[in-house]
Amino acid sequence: MKKRIGALLVFVTIVLLLSIHFGNKQKHSEETVFKKEGIEFWVISDPHYIDKSLTDSGLAFKKIKQTAAGKELEHQKESWQAFINKAIEQKPDMLIITGDLTLNGEKVSAEKLAEFLTQLTDHGIKVFVIPGNHDVNDGWARKFVGEKQEKTEAISTTDFKEIFANFGYQTATNYDKSSLSYAVAVNQQYNFLFLDSNIYPDNGQSQASPTTGGTIRGRTMKWVKEQLETAKQEKKQTLVFMHHNLYPHNQLLSTGFVLNNAEEFKQVLADYQVPIVFSGHIHAQDIMTETIGQHELTEIVSSSFSIAPQGYGVVKLNGQSFDYQKKENASTVAVSQIEDYSAYSKALFIEDGERLGYEQLIDAGLSDSKKLDVAAEFVGQVNYRFFSGNDFSSDKQEADLKVEPGYQIIAENSRFLKEYIDSIIQDKNQSDNQFKKKLTD
Image 1 (cartoon, rainbow, N blue to C red):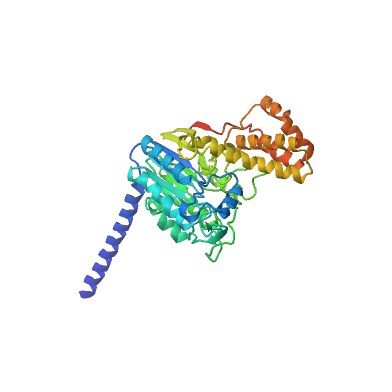
Image 2 (cartoon, helix red, strand yellow; image 1 turned 45 degrees about the vertical axis):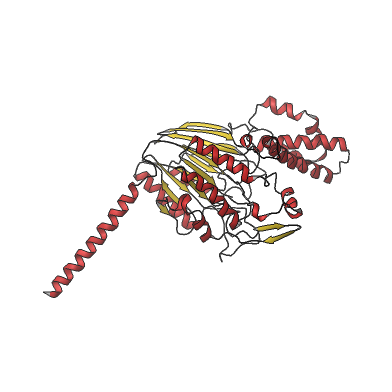
């Protein structure tokens, strides 16, 4: 009798545990961040924030600014606060950041950036982040003191989850155990996948330098397919957010920017009818659509928030209606010692392009200072057009640019520089600053 009672109790306990497990699982799958159909989210990428506590603006920091590819690093606190204030005023439902949150993975920078983001969550704006190749286990994490660079604590994978716990990880409906990827049930129509596309050392230690390239690793790929299958069964659409690019948005700037297994991943996304992917990494604003089989898949790449004009995307998603518009933050930034921050940050970026022009032409043997000035100025202006997403132009506009003296000097003196300019001078596929589409089931 006692054995029967014992067996019955075990059976009841198992049934109870299973009912709790599957009941929680069902409840978990039904939970969504928003109960409404129409949502607005903002998306940025590559802010490369470095906290002011890590620099005294001395010689070492001045040198790093000169090699920062046109990033504005001196007044990021002010530019971030202007952006936060704008978001609080306009009240989007969500802000999404697709990686490279910090300059080079400094833990202090991540912690201070999290404080900025907390202002948004305090006002009911959800924030979701994913790491970029400069965020985790980056051996370049530095503090700049006078003429010296000093190592500072880098962000580990555990640190990233802890620091940004309130910005995606606690809201997630599912996690990938082998990466920092996670899934979010946004509403009854949409799931968002936030993917960690970075390559880390097997020993979990900081790398001497960050790995530029990225991939969707085997276990993560399996997890992605599971999430997409779940969404399919629930008759929901999925949007994907990652750091590395799915498509080559510039033929000369594709190695290390496009996923190592992009072809495989594109097919997975097409198989599950994913309509839109967001990414960053290349620092250039660009939108590109490919037809894979009979499915159209669009990638929207956000330019770096650390360079002019500090672009950010505003997305209005309502049922099957998708509307993306690029906006600019720089014009709203106020810095006491700078009369016009927008012009200041733009000049920084153009000067970086000019520096490239001078270096390449001098290396090619050009010594005429007047010709150098004309050609370098041309490089700076065309470079800015490309990275800000304003290179979508007609054949006539391209022809007009190619008869300018600056282009002619480049064509005559530097094969490499000409190839680079030719690769960025015209975007013919589609406009890079707005995109509207009716998404279908």
